[in-house]
Length: 85
Image (cartoon, rainbow, N blue to C red):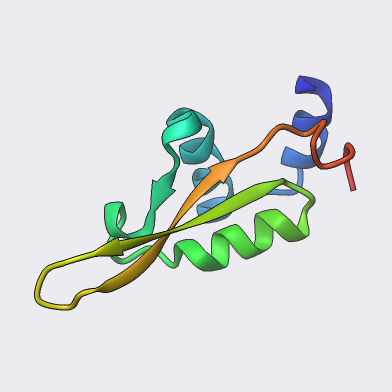
């Protein structure tokens, strides 16, 4: 598993690589754009998925002055996604 992840990680840089590292650190808890104001997290997630990383989106409701919902992103296992793309 680590070897496949390292191979796909080679082409990543900047915020996309940063987002992958944050997903790995968060584990099952996942990450949300509410934690990182100013970061286009959805764009990073899009690019990671395009690179073959299995990322799950869980919709969560939130209150406050602008109630609505946001996505929580979690990194799945490479085996679940069928290996490197």
